[in-house]
Length: 132
Image 1: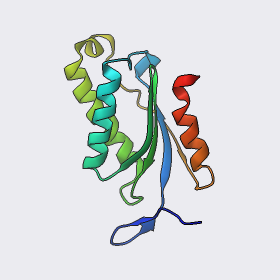
Image 2 (image 1 turned 135 degrees about the vertical axis):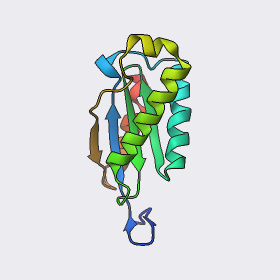
Image 3 (image 1 turned 180 degrees about the horizontal axis):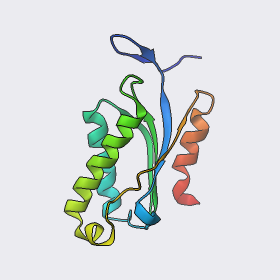
């Protein structure tokens, strides 16, 4: 079995995280056209901070991401950057988000590490979110 490992100057790693976060009050605001724009912004910001979004699904009231990131940068920084950037841009572009919510995202989020055995299961779970 080969592993998809990466390395920086100090660490060789294979770190993947299942991350879930929600809009404030779990409001169902992540629908078109907000959904499409959110996907673009997440991919853009992830690339900028040298993080990979392996899988993504946007539900009306929550976001599922499978993220691969450098452990020295840290998943907390990644989530903070993704949520902060998307909140600022989406609230500027979609004024209804500003009027309905004091901030776009809740302060909390769910994160779980994903081992290589679980990877396919988690990917399938995220891919099938819309069909539930």
